[in-house]
Structures are given as C-alpha cells and as structure tokens.
Amino acid sequence: MKLSNVFKGAAALAAAFLCVCAANVQAADGGAFSVDFTQKIGDVRPINGINLWANMSCETIEDRRPLAEACQFSTVRLHDAPWDNNGIRLVDVHQIFGNLDADPKDPKNYYFGPTDDYIRNILTAGAVPIYRLGTSIEHTATKYFAIKPADPEHYAEICAGIVRHYNAKWADGFEWNLPYWEIWNEPNIVPQMWDSDYESYCRFYVVVAKRLRAEFPNIKIGGPALAGSNLAQIKQLADLCKREGAPLEFLSWHCYARYPNELLDPPAEIRKTLDEAGFPDAELHLNEWHYFPTEWSVVHGTKGGDQAKRELSESPTGLHGAEAAAFVDFVLTRWLDTPLTMSNYYAFGLERWGLIDPYGKLRPTYFALKFFGELRTEAPKRVATADPGQYVSLLGAVSEDGSAKRLLVSVYKQDDAQTVEIDLKGVPEQGEVQVDYIDYDHDFASETVAYTDGKLKLNAQKSSVFLVRF
Image 1: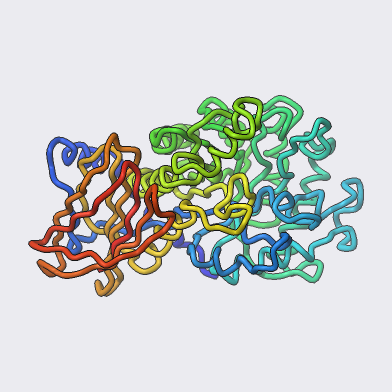
Image 2 (image 1 turned 135 degrees about the vertical axis):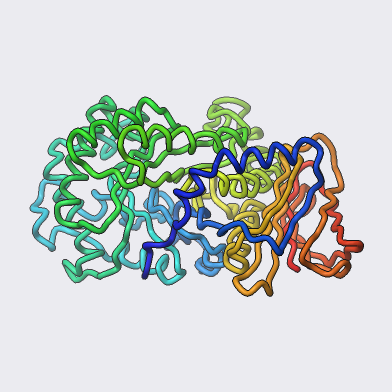
C-alpha cells in the first residue's frame, strides 16, 4: 500500500487558505450559484475518515462490511472498538496484552487474533487504519484502564510489540506498514480517560513516542486526541516534544459541534500554533467529530428523560437526521479550503452515535458520508464553484479524464425552503441528470431532473443534500 502521497496538497492549501476564503466572501456579496466543470482547482482530498468499522459481534447476522465499504472512507480510526463488539478483545493495549505486568518481549503474552481480523477487513476495503494505542473511554464509577500507566517505559515496550506485530511480522504478524499510531485518547477528560494532570500525559507521550521512533523510523506518531482544541494544551505538548526531541507527526483533537465554525475555524489556528512551535509538517487530524445540536445532559438522560433522547436520535433535526446530514457534507466541503489533513466522523458503529439505528435502518448521515465518498472516488478532481449562501455549499468535481462530473450541494439549516438555481458550465445547455438527495421527508431518495438554458434548479427544504450525477 503506497501512502506517501495520500494527503498530498494539504500544505499548499494551508498557504492558500486566506485567498480561498476571500473568493467565497466575494461570491457572497451578490454572486450567483455556479459550477464550472472546465476549471480544475485541485484534488478532492481524502478527508472523509470514520471511527470504527463494521462490527464483528452484533445481534444481527447481517454482514455490514459492504455498507462500510460503499462509503469509500479514506481512514478508519480504531477507538472504542470493544464497546462496539460485545465480548471481543480488540485494539486496546490491555485487551491485547492482558497482564500489563508481563514480559513485553514474549510473544505469548499478546492476544492479537480478533484485532488482526478487524484490521484486515479495513485494509481489504482500501481504507487506512489509524491505530489508537491506549484504552477506550470508561464511564464506570471505577476506572480500570483509563489511568496513567504506572511504568511508562514498560507500557511503551508493550506498544512497540503491537507495532512490531503489524509492521514487522513479529509474533506471527504482518508487514502491513500501518502508518498512523496515536498515543492515548482525550487525556484532558478526567476521570473518564486519565486520572492525573495534563502535564503527566505530555511526559507519558514523550516516553512512548521516543521509544516507537527508535525502532520504527517510518511510522507517523501523534496525539493527543484532545477533547476540544485548546491551543495552550496543544502548545504545551508541542513545546515538550521539541525540547525532548520526540516526534509529533500529526496533531489530533475532537469536537462535537452545533455550529459549522466550531469545526472550520480550528485548523488554521492549530496550524499556526504548530508552525510556531517548530512542527510545520505535522498533519492536522480532527479525528472524532459529530453534529451536536443539544446538551450532554440530554444525551446522558439527566435532562428531558427518554422522550428527549428518542427525539434526539430519531428527529430530522437531531443527531442523525436531515439537518445532521446537511451539516456533515457542508463541513466536509468547507474543510477542503482549510489546512485540515484528515477528519474521522464518530462513528460507523455504536448505535447512539453511529450511521445505523438499532433496527438496521441506515440513517441520513450514512448517505451524506456515502455521497462524499462516492464523489471523491468517482470524480477526484475538484472544479471551480461559487456558493453565495452562508450555509449553502457546492462541491463540483470531475474524473481524471473528465467523463464523470459530480456536484454535491449542501443546504444547511436555512430559514425557509428555497430553490437553489445553479449556473452550469462544461455540460450541455440542457439535459437530464440523476439526483440523489436527503431531506426531512426522505432519508434517501433518487430521481431524474431536467435542466435547461444551462441552469439546474434544486428544490431544497431547510436542510437538504443533493448529489448530482452528470
């Protein structure tokens, strides 16, 4: 698997960020919606990652791997896998290395089998795993593994054994060359993920990162998978890494957002912080995110009761409905004009947060992610667009030879239903197109739409998504 050019162009986009934003502002000052399929402006970068893969253990006998593969996810972050696979020991360091006091150099102390199969399924689909070293979140009263390791050097040796198994054939392993290795998850969430101060995590990170770099010069090591994008905490880790000579090849953070700017603004701010700290080549991974139009007290059932939780799950304006679907494709489109390297939606599985409801129904957010994945796969070259609506985005793209043309239109949370009229260039003046769409009345639907005089009209509800195939 050749991965060296997977995220080619992110650095150039960082430099061009202000110019792109200026173009959008100019369009917002009275221009029309338009797409020019003759004017290529770059690649549709592979920013459409996911957390978790099709679960291996569930009550249904349905194989959900084809559903995951159809979304064409670029990367898959391996976090919380045990919570999505009942009774199976997966991914977490303590799940693989059951006795944390044992000898990390003895292959007999590792239990790799289920994780081997889980990662193999991801690689077979053509996605790139991001391996999170550490533990899944613990919401229990007592924390068993979401605690600072007593012996960081010993823990680092265990982590090295896991990397060695997957990249150097150790312990009946593989040469999969898994590129991304993330150290821990949300150490600033106490006590669910860490039981000490953030400085102690930073020191722990340095120990593990330097140990892995000593044996594995070609992997990318990163973290801290922060809850939020606290620039002071990011700088604290980066400064320590610079002083100690520890690698920081990608910086990761998380955000559950009500407003698009909560997701769209941090990449430029974090890029500046890392550049100033001496890590200009560090990738930016927003590797856990979700639409979140509510409060955590509603999610956890302490406010509003079961009815509020049910509406949050099932309503068109809730976590997974048409509003969430429009939000997803809106921010994915806008991220292409930021320095962001990778995003990983949370999550494919886990019914509360995932793309499939408890009864096997595909949610609108599933189709929103599938729309973007299909566009990126079928038409990877981005073309020029103008989208003057504040929360209306257009993503136009063509295939390498120009034979396939795609247009993704996201209309997010407008005051009223509206007709979006789009000027077309690079296609016949009139014709018919296939339009797949999501709105309040349709989790997914498809129809043929005629256009004339070089103008395509799409009837949008307050929140809608359209994938147009020319």
